[in-house]
Image 1 (cartoon, rainbow, N blue to C red):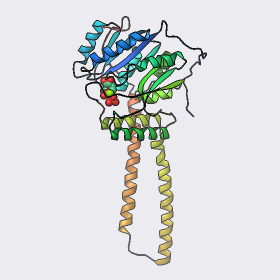
Image 2: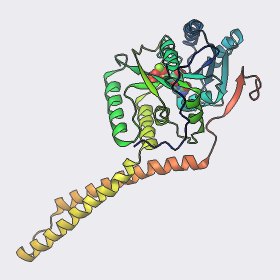
Image 3: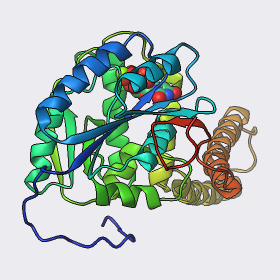
Image 4: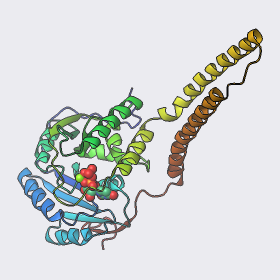
Length: 334
Ligand code: UDP
Ligand code: MG
């Protein structure tokens, strides 16, 4: 059912080894000045235990605070911390793509820098990878750090998404995961500008393994995802992976059409049998208002897709890098 036009060579099911391999972390940062010191302390500690070479690619996504300065301070201290400074705020999905493009590791882990993605999990990810998983993704076992409304809407979203699209989005899986280099290369080949990473992660397939974890509260600072943003995020997700919301209108139209013909027949019959009576103004209004509302909804759904086609067709680059720090020989370094 899930189509996979990107041909991927299936490797021998041999187990892998981390020895001599490199792990790339991708950390998008937007207004995270308070949490970064803590983040690096925790993450470097954890990475030291793993026994692999690593790099931490941090993307400053147009922060309005001193995030960039803090990142550069850490880059000076530890050259494995590399910084991509985007020209403005492009949003987490795009920042993550910018980071993925810059990674060189055999394993790649996108991670939030607010410590909501517990660094201890990376050890388990790497083990799963050594045992043959191409993707090891974290699944939140309890969402008690979220509000009731957020939990409810998240649940509704996963249900709607999985019903409407061919891609199965695992419940409560976020962006936190480890991916093999081959998976990252497939992701990088996907040309779309509207990048709903959760969906793309699932769409690529490969051998995926779920690793349960409890998601803590953000260590400091505030979440930049408010409900309106989440709603738009959900719309992006569904429209990028399903055409059901525009296709369904043909059926709605068909049903309305059949009903209208039936109604017309009834009216003709009634007039013939009983003669003309007082015209039904209320029922007429109901029909007019209802069909008007439905038409507006249908046009709206169409608009959502047309707008996205427009975005894709413009073909603008996904993101604009202002400067890069720590990427020797990979483009201009500031
Ligand atoms: N983020 C980003 N650009 C944005 C918004 C968020 O790079 O426009 C980053 C943010 O710095 C964090 C991650 O995305 O590392 C998740 O954001 P947040 O914690 O605000 O979201 P939540 O955990 O509440 O879903
Ligand atoms: Mg967070």
